[in-house]
Length: 111
Length: 113
Image (tube, rainbow over the protein chains, first blue to last red):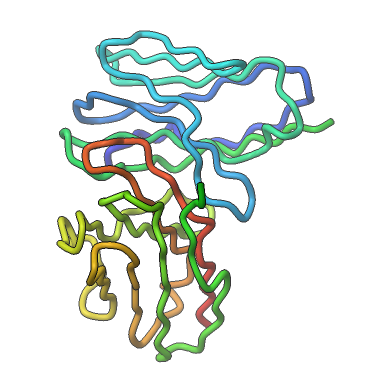
């Protein structure tokens, strides 16, 4: 597998709290993407970070990438109940054209 | 802009039966992907196309699975003689070649009993 085991998590939090999830990858990649999948829907891209970026922000989302440790994190600040979803990191292995997904982190946000 | 459309939304089969899944990608997207997502797991690539050509089908399980995209637009994924282990959601995604921004459909949820 391309992904390490930290990807497998389930987190339950209250609205307004911040949450951070992590993933690690085993081989070199030029980009890490984070997808959100809500129940009954397909995954949707929420943020993409390239190997020449250490941090990327988009609204309440913040992604980091550490190429030396081959790890990435996604933080959501001020969570809402609508942030309840499974979050996946994904990357194109060895510059290939197809994304490889991690196992995902389940985030449940209570109102 | 219409998204990626998949049908049917659900399918229930007995072992040994056949089923086909259909995908209509975003207009203009030349690359189409099929993923299998078992319950509580991440999507796992099965096959992908650029136009009508198969780029990689190495993860397509043996001879029971097949996929085609004859005109480089819509695609069909078929399972012959389904097994209980095929129970999963089958996701279709599309993109422009070389672009990592995929658009996924809502998937077809398959239950094999």
